Length: 135
Image (cartoon, rainbow, N blue to C red):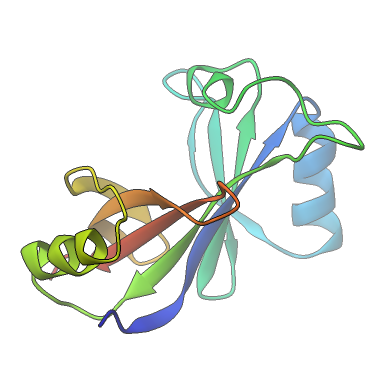
């Protein structure tokens, strides 16, 4: 069994970076935590104990999600769930027992710093990241 602790982050894709930043920073009060525009096209905003990642569609990272968001095409790339510390092998075994294909865990940055995570798909094809914070 996997023990979800919190939502770590969600990733929004955009063609309007400046407007998105103005909305989330100036209107909603998020703060810019980290930017890697030259490597990935990513801006991470602090939203309480979680992050909202804004990714430009034309960037290396944004292009993975396909075309630009529209009124009928989603702009949510994935969401990330923080899980209680547990053996990565046990997590993979649990998911595999339920017929869920799993890649290897990879070190990534999230709301609580660096941690290992993997991506899986839900029944509708949405990408869910499961993440443990490194000690």
